[in-house]
Length: 566
Image 1: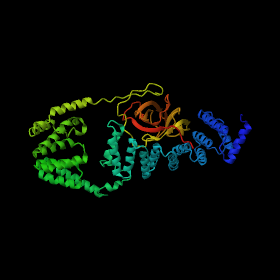
Image 2: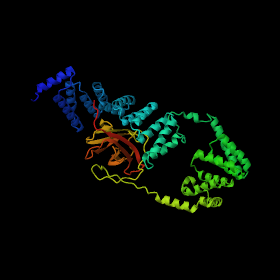
Image 3: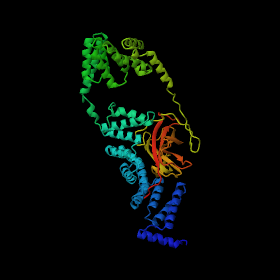
Image 4: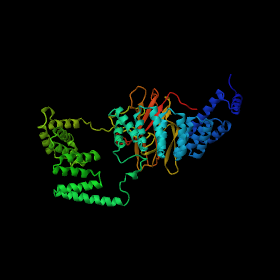
């Protein structure tokens, strides 16, 4: 038995009056109407779309899907306030419709209404609490408005949901460091170093971050009060600086005149003014050696190394420590220092060490002398070390650049690129560097602004997709309009999919940003057998060359078996 037009109308009216679920046929018709209207305006056929939406809303004002679709239409036509009202009405009708909150967040974020956008994003997190990507996006949003303590909790939840994702853990470590939880931050970075393979992007990023969290950097975290690190406040700094410079000049002149006892006193005066003057520590070590006080000279050199690690005086400091140890008869220890200089002899080619590297002829002579004072089985052969250095240098592969073909969807892909093509970024993965916003979406629409600029806006923004979604689009907004044409290359990676191999390249895309572009997008079509369930990453590179130097940002999305819509 088929439904007549009158029966369907009666069914809809009764359902709306009694707030009952629609009959199947009426619901299907409503879905078809929404799909038809959405498809029409996305294809540019929007002549009477507004009137048709008004008619649909008049007849069925309680279907949140129509309000959501109408909001999408208004957004594409830059009627932002009307679109916002439509989205909010949809959220009132269906508070648990996650697609409504995603659309609201995307619009508010693009409008610059950060506080309201954060509230919408919190609704997304509430409805998708098991999604670590949602927590990461919220954490980044909170950091952008300096709500650092709240962002730490969001990072913590993301790590708890996926404890084996080391990039999430690094972002969590940086967030902890910024709120001055130094020990916890260091623990997280050391965890990554212990778990990550040494040829991985996560390991490289952790090596960069470990020095910061250990306190070796001037960066002490965003919540740190930098003023407390100033030892001498106000006008006294100039007076102290002048005293230091004068004392340093006197010490240098005394060393030139070989008045080493007086030079020692002058250098100690310099260090009393500025205890972390590593050059004064180095000079003090040389002066003490000239005075025959080798035992005292060694700590002076070592303190200078501790303060500056591998600064310009490091190689000669190591050599001088070896000489002191030799004078003290500690030949085994001296031998190790001399061998170290031979190991790093290629550092002479670097500008920083060119003027201060010790004379290799003297180093070899000292090494030969030390060899005479240790058993034959413990001697070090300088020629053997130099041969090993040459082999190591020859084994370093040359860096090759690979050009990504434009729009490689459906075409043969480039061969795998040897690591590293990038270091794991420490942002949330949704926007960084050149990009103000980076949003995965199912669709995109273009708006030509009166100023001549072009703006692309995401349709159905989300970070969660289905295996049969026809394509996935990453829509991005630039922080500023480019001053010249820019090629943006994207590599789409299967980051984690079941038991399969990680970081597998599945596609590429290339976008060209011109002087009229303030936004853009890249896209990838569905693989033949559908999207495998898992987490994906899109790496962005400036230009058509793939390397760690051109890597500028990354975005993530995931594929799940089913979606929560209401």
